[in-house]
Picture 1 (cartoon, rainbow, N blue to C red):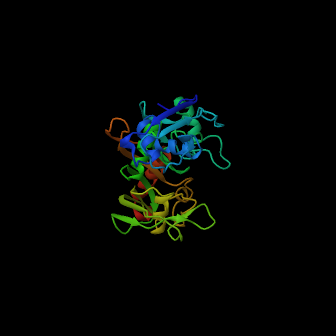
Picture 2 (tube, helix red, strand yellow; picture 1 turned 90 degrees about the vertical axis):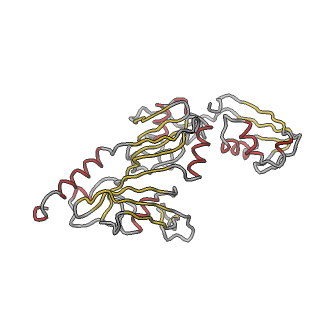
Picture 3 (cartoon, rainbow, N blue to C red; picture 1 turned 60 degrees about the vertical axis):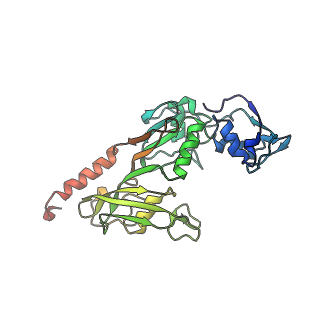
Length: 324
């Protein structure tokens, strides 16, 4: 269950088996309905005391210590539920799997308060409020505004903690479909280029002084006319804009990408040059169910705009070169 809206207090006594354990880890074991991340947030806010003294997450427990954790009422959120269309592919008591439309921002940010995925989820999944925080309830991972496709939403703190751990351990399998400029030199391959934030900009780059490991495997699915290809991309890491940055770095940016798409060919048809968003779609996601432990796999079909783009390119590819 989610943390209740009313105030709650836990009083726990450390026994001999708790000796030397980290405080946050031990509490997460004892209070199963709360995630470790949520417990850490409460500790940072001074809501946890040991024998009357404010504690830290890294505190090593001693037998006999009395731990008191206060869970205040859920903070009121300024995010109002909005009845916007969203496709729910699956849901149960712990999770929901949705198909995010292109053009929808995942959570509120600078200058964006309405029309977000979070406000939409609060309407369709009313029990979500308070799970994992006020501004990003239920959000386990995110997709860029222009990217469509499948996402997991956690409906309890326990599910959120489990799914976040799976992402951190890189056991979640993700498959993206992308239409890219040009023809990749190999039918499949791996791009292993570190990614960091561009200096003074909101974009990412493979040439940043401060960067993190990033790994993307790709597989060419189909050559689409002379200008581009349909590829599957399998990111092993989860860096911001990873697939878009990696494909651009090897000279084959995603069609329609306003930030990294410097691969537009002037001889390409207008509909291709002016495609209105990155031609990138989160097609499939696979993970362990946070409660049952079963391996789950969900797929979101290509949206209408990408289907139409690919169909138009296939039509051109089928024509003799003299008629193109």
